[in-house]
Image (cartoon, rainbow, N blue to C red):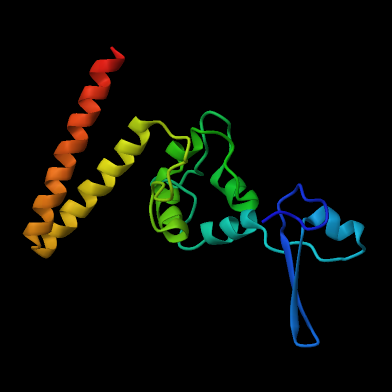
Length: 171
C-alpha cells in the first residue's frame, strides 16, 4: 500500500479512526508520519525477531565446542544472534546446522513457496510448477488417491516434454 501523503513510498503506518460512525483509514510512510509530527514508528524489527529466535535451543558451537564462525567473513553465530543478519552468502553453509531449524520455525519451509514473479521466464515457472506437482504426487501416493496421482503424473510428463522442446529450440 502506498503512502497517502507523498504517494511514493510504501506505507508502514496504518491508522483507523472512527468519527461520527464513519471509519477513516490513513496510510503513511515513516518519513511522512514524522513530518506530520506523529511519533509513530514501526516498532517491529525483523532483525531483532530473528536474533531472539536464534537463541532457542542452539548453542552456536560445533561438536568440539568451538565457536561457530564463517571462514569467509569471520562472522560468528553469536554476531548473527545479536544482529539478526548474516555476513555473507557462505554463512548459510557454515551455520547450516543451526539455521535450518530456525528457518523452518520462521518460514515453515526451507525453500521459497510464494508466488512466482509475473515477469519470470517460462522455464522458471515450469520448474516451480514441476516441483509443486512432484510434491502433490507424493502426497497423493501417501494418501492412496491414485486417480488424482495419475492425473498429476500425466501433467508432469506434459510439462517435462514442454521443457525439453524449449531446450531444443534454444540450442
